[in-house]
Image (cartoon, rainbow, N blue to C red; front, top):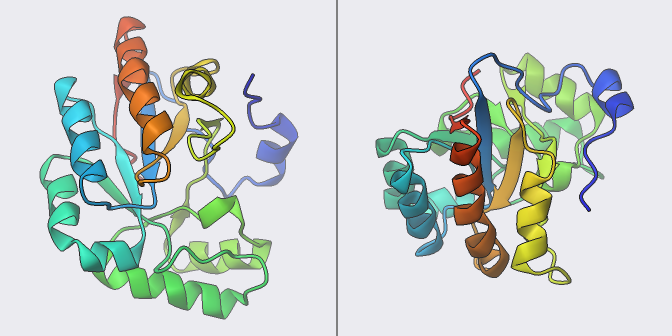
Length: 204
């Protein structure tokens, strides 16, 4: 069973966004690593069935290769976030090098939302990003769709066992994750609306 983010971690990282408490019953589906041909369009089609809005944390290099997909994401009312230019891990990189990579991606993405690949970011990098005007967005529900040792059913359980108003849920917009994500996403959307919740983009 998926374990939620420990409260102590939330308490010691107050400048990072782990969830978005709200009174209107919104949840926040997010998709990392895209845009990806065929996969992005499939996700957009699933979201459109419910008029659900989401947030796509895009890799700058992918957005550069497939600008029409970035345009589609925005045209359909979804939010765009920055996921570095080439999926750079923060650990082992200087704050200056890391910020430069993020800024390279942001020339195209033009967003104030940022999610570190793998969640790996140092305190100094987080401070520099915040000073540069970014909101560092993590999550409190991880589907683990990237894990080749689980199946779609387990991925769905991971995405929904702790789902509630304010949850930030991570899926991935990639070929590697499609098998699990494509099973879990439609069922997650069904459950969200069965519970009277709604999917909104992250706006900070």
